[in-house]
Image (tube, rainbow, N blue to C red):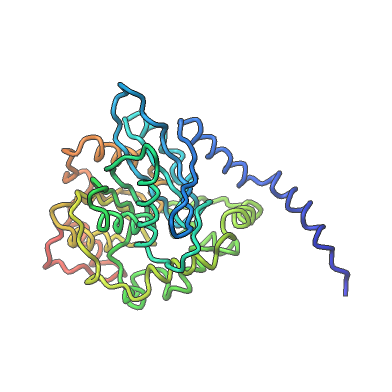
Length: 354
């Protein structure tokens, strides 16, 4: 049996990998984007021992033009800097003041608590925002995918703080029974965890194929392995528990209604959270919500259609009078017909969508 290298031999190898890691290089670039935008990084300790790391704008100076504070919540894929860096310049130029936290067990945020629910995530984010010396009393919230679940609970539990809501591809209306009914590309929570927390190149390729309407054709294995090593190996156990807490036993009848004006944005070809969930959420919220279907986009709208997504967010927060019920986004009858002819569960056309 060949002799095993001493543990100390792995240290130079890790240093070499980190030095020449394209993922770490991109991570540093995203961090510089936040610094260049004028945002400051803070670690906010909470009473239960949790620590929320977030980026926030500097304190407003006397006589400065008031900005629109907006809380940006990332999805399950990566940390906040990776998902929101491209959006900072246009949002700042539009007069928005972004607050960008890492959710618990993502980035540098952590907690000793056993609670893995989105409601706990929301409570931590709300407490961190309140603890900021110059934090806003009221703000808009934008949540992408998993961040949308947290945003929804935040709006329900802290209505005095959340002014309006933007939910991007956030399947908050999903039910545990939807897995067995074949609505999703996975059959159970364990398979969903292996897909969303890829540990092998083939798993990451499958995830990209599901999240993008037009996935990249060229994905070198060396880059994929590097990305998995850097981005997908921390807090795997805790993130898996987050998924179980998110889906297990979930029922639409248990989902509370929120009163804040809400913009729902969905990719036309979303295969992670199919469009039926967006229609279901619109029915659940009723007249307080608007639904925009982005054409030629999958689940990763923030990657495939960043300019359109940024425009929708900016307009909805800066000008609340903007409405999206127009013909450019397609008619609802065509949406129902498309569902009726698809492999997904059919939408009950006898129930009003709007």
